[in-house]
Amino acid sequence: MRVGAGALAGIGAGVAASLASAAAPHNGQVVIAVTDIRSTKGVVRACMTMRADIFPKCIKDPAAFRAVVPASATVEIRFAGVKPGQYAIALLHDENGNGKADRAMGVMPTEGYGFSRDAPVKMAPPKFKDAVFALGEGASRVTIKMRYFL
Image 1 (cartoon, rainbow, N blue to C red):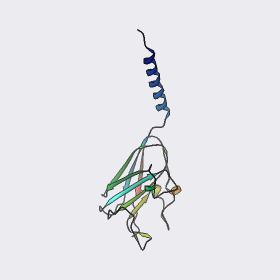
Image 2 (image 1 turned 180 degrees about the vertical axis):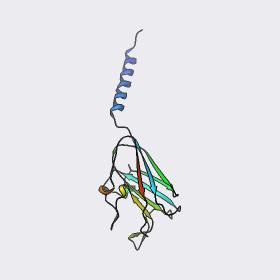
Image 3 (image 1 turned 60 degrees about the vertical axis):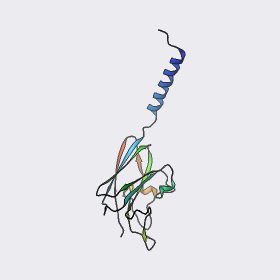
Image 4 (image 1 turned 90 degrees about the horizontal axis):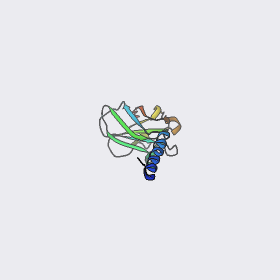
């Protein structure tokens, strides 16, 4: 049986592709469990980014993972196809569904918020370094407690 050069080239390309995919990191999944939601009004907005320069306003990051889900007693958000790296997550319980974080007197949040690593909120949202977590290959589960100022 003779094998043509074209067939050998095709086999070689297939082997090369297999080796390349074996060496490349596999994309994973992040599952976010949101706890302590005070009501089922509105939606929960989630944003996950690798960019420290714009966190927590990761809407400015076109590569960020985003989701909007109905608020409920139990909320779980999944981001698939996530490359290994350093990420931070910001959540907003947008109770009135207006797409923004409402504030009383321009400073105090009137809706719920939460951050990965339960990063503390003092006089401003947390810095990326306070919320960042490392994501490897495979699945990762992150629990974020929703907090309310008012």
